Image (cartoon, rainbow, N blue to C red; front, side):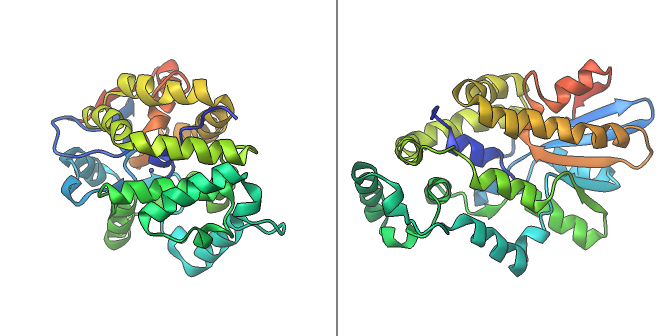
Length: 291
């Protein structure tokens, strides 16, 4: 298996770029076609308390929007039924356990890591290795202070309270299918790489947050998007190319009618040669940063 950057993927999946706020610039843009406008915000899915309040550009775009569009159904993901469905697809159902899926060396390394966190590894025995990789990475984010609702949750709640319509590009099942199959078939390689990767998580966060706070899509492309494509082209194709292509028809419809939308998606979807912005620029739309 190619080296899959689990930490970077978490930052861009809607169930995740991480950054302190308060900068002069922000990852908010305005796309126009004559009299029609769509705002885009590169989202942060988990935050530190010190990151709040969000930059004013997000609130300005929200105030100007008649409707919000997310990657997936944020509110629906929180229902007990959805939570139970997600859990059912994260567990092993073929008679194996995490211990039997891993070789002795990998299992020992994982156990040592979990022991250092004071968490019994037996708690993870029923989980698919891909979910273990994601879970231990999320634990590191939380250990580094990322324990607040992110941009998506904040504005989904605000829109509901204000009575603004909410739509989304893909179903919860679409996102869950991607998450549970992340990393391919080499369980040992995935766990070992994730254990190594989380040791450098603070530096990775620094790289991502600097590009996000500046709304610098070129830097974001160089530091996150291009490495993702090089290290795991299959994941890049399904996470970025396929989903952007799937979303474009709806975005094009938004730019043909009067209601103004605010589209909130992971910032990786807005950077690079296969990005939403690249596709819109190729069609002649005007894209400008909200200052």
